[in-house]
Amino acid sequence: MEFVPTIGYLVLAPLLLLLAIIFYLNPPKKKNPYYGYRTKRSMSSEEAWAKGNALCNRWFLFLAMGLNLVQVVVFKACDLTTAILVMTGLIVVSLPVMILLIEQELKADGHGS
Image 1 (tube, rainbow, N blue to C red):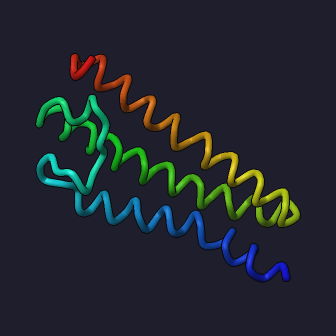
Image 2 (tube, rainbow, N blue to C red; image 1 turned 120 degrees about the vertical axis):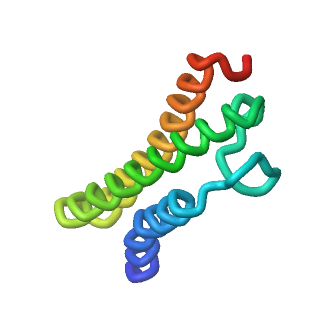
Image 3 (cartoon, rainbow, N blue to C red; image 1 turned 180 degrees about the horizontal axis):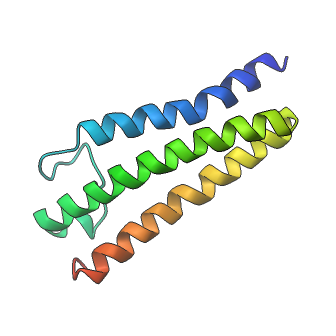
């Protein structure tokens, strides 16, 4: 019964890392409606698009690497339920914070409103 939650837990951070690596190695070349860091501010110009995607790809890669390291420690130190709650909380908080920081950086550069 615990097998499925354990596998789901163990796969999540590596999956985020895989996505981060793919985005880092294959950033979008120009604005498009399908792929990349897409916010009102990042879509305001090609320069904002390039900077937003560069920041997002780099920070997402570092975040994913950090989450993988934390996951190993938490999995060893805590029971499964606590580990899942800790990692879920970190992901739920860290991704929006990353977006907020990117948006602040774009705003500081005068992109969007």
